Image 1 (cartoon, rainbow, N blue to C red):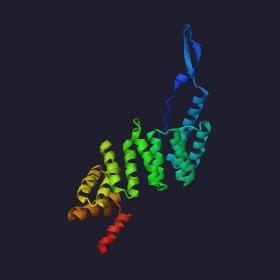
Image 2 (spheres, one colour):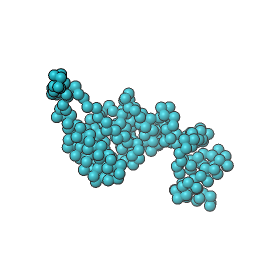
Image 3 (tube, rainbow, N blue to C red):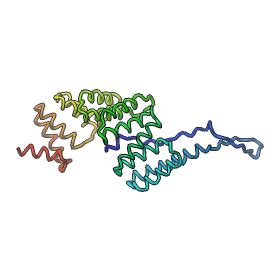
Image 4 (cartoon, rainbow, N blue to C red):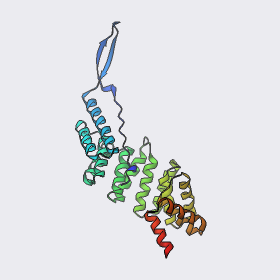
Length: 265
């Protein structure tokens, strides 16, 4: 699963308005009210700390301790949304799809209008379950959140999902929306170039693969696509340049082997 399509935000704002207070008096006789955390806030703080620890273990590849910490977080606060998201990712890593789905759905149900929870569930359903039709409404909910900080990600995920569902025209629309928001969205640029190529529009596809290339990124898939686009346009030298870069940078890739096989025919 492309877990870079999932967001793991765990920031929590402590709401002092609901706190009880105690009063202390300094040496000068002035009284000061010091807010004290309520029981609910203490539980949420415990959940936050253990969720962040679980993320650190996850980042280090220690899935067993990550699972222990995230379960502890949920003991503190069963309704802490970031904990359910991290739990879902941990279960995803250990290929426990039923529990991964359970926690993605729980996070979404606790934050039904939040961009990240909807994007995460939508991507899981599309990428892991192949449920394009079920996934799409969640992406729409994600981009409808006016406070969602990465709507380009949701549009890119939606487009990728539509490609898998063979809706190339719909995917093109979503990738263009992603690029409109974030012109340097490399994934959307590559995917749009691919969609246009698949729709036999190599000329426009070329513009977007060149924009992707200009970002200084490189992948076997993008270089192979660049080669195919230039070949279809009859630009032999440009196609050869992509081919050489592919063979040099990714000699053991599936794409490089495919070009080798074609050249030998």
